Image 1: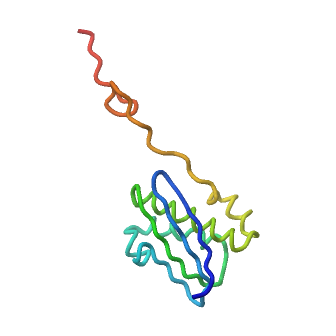
Image 2 (image 1 turned 30 degrees about the vertical axis):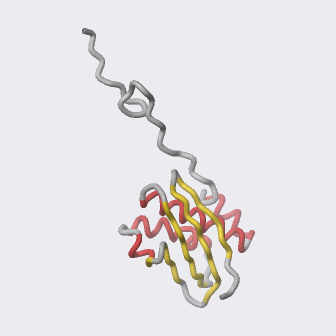
Image 3 (image 1 turned 120 degrees about the horizontal axis):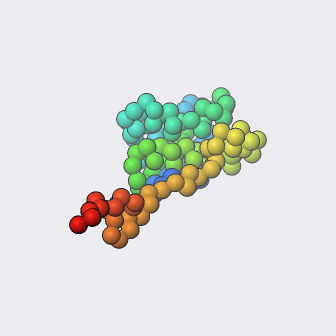
Length: 130
């Protein structure tokens, strides 16, 4: 097997370990399934592939991803983050393009913890005067 580049992408609590290998034609496997099979909606499939599409590479890649944690939308964004990092590691010229689009920034937003005395992170029980 030829040399591959591995990187990690994260979003909320999901983590994606992305490996890219240069090849003749494109192949995109996520947890052993094809990308169309793993992500049910067209939107999430697009999000996962976005870094490859926006980089403007005509060359093919075999992309294998192991992703876990959180929900599927967060996983799609973690895959995009990891793929962008791997592409930059392969060719540093792409860094400027991918950074401007915002694919190299780890999205720090995550769920706020529930506080005691409240129903959720900020939702308080109904106030009554008496």
